[in-house]
Length: 280
Ligand code: PMP
Image 1: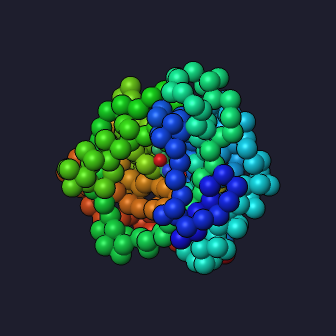
Image 2: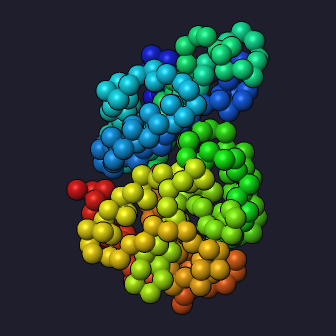
């Protein structure tokens, strides 16, 4: 496993950052996860653009720029065997000599990290039976549109879901669905596909955008509008999307079957379209 750290490539196990790094101390950092299919990064330009937005969102100068990120991702994929994987990128505000909350105290270079992880194939059982999800209060901060590594609420929510034999926590703020703890949420009501509109409480998921585009191209009726939690409980289908888990069906919500309790027909169709898109 070859990683990248501040301008050089080295074995992942040897890649270390100082204790004073602000990513470690404060979660003062942003990240990206880019899925790779047979050596090809999927929607790379979209991921790099979102990384730029996240950097601007925390007031950090982009240390590499779009061309630099593209070259780095391509290099990492090649050095890690050009197969199926996910590239992880993280940029922190660096490691100044003192712990100090104020971002201006970090005058040195940012810390830039990249590495690859295997992307395990989505389990057949998950696709045949779907997964369970639980509904939880969205306890995260106000800027979930920034892809920050400060993920403590997401981590605790993932643990809560797991402790309740669920695969994901679907989050609700002011009575409306925002997103999953590490995914975006879609609901199907009749023949309409619904997902909450982008706002500060939602990460603009790359998979979300691709699924919306593919659905519109296939003439599926799409509504980007708020989903009251009662509507989620009454949905015919619920799906979650993310770069690593693609598009997967939720068939139990808070212990109750979603629709007939099996992955639905629109999910089957959209999964096929997304599979074709990632592999073309
Ligand atoms: N929302 C959150 C909170 C996430 O962590 C993720 C995945 N990292 C997503 C949505 C899905 O985004 P994407 O499709 O870009 O992976």
